[in-house]
Length: 144
Image 1: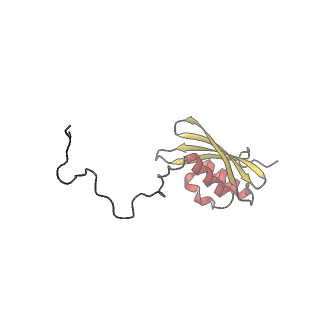
Image 2: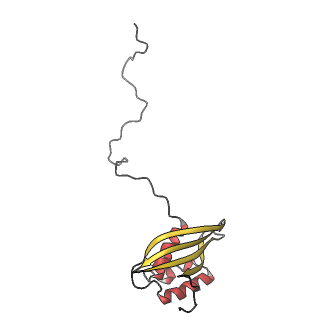
Image 3: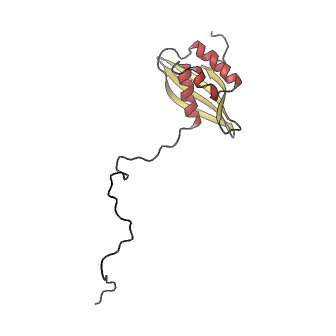
């Protein structure tokens, strides 16, 4: 029986030469993370402002007209208290393309707070907050 394929001469490889540096992808490398959803990003930002961890002007460029005034009133009230808040759950509803109505449950100490806000994608393709409510009461309404 004859061999069908024979190799003559040195073996030629079609693979590129092996790397000799240590910068290659190793077992500790992970895939790049996807950016957070705008609803998650804005929830975190609002919680930081409402708890006093960040100043109000830090969020100012993300809020439009009435939402900034609402946030100003809510931040002055220090509605989330001195305890460091934790975000329990975030949900959203998309009433139209380019807008979200977002709700979140925020735990601050023993209390659970409800945060609701509206996001709109403006002409410059940036998300802007247009309304903010905390604990189901509209801003500037007197507390019971």
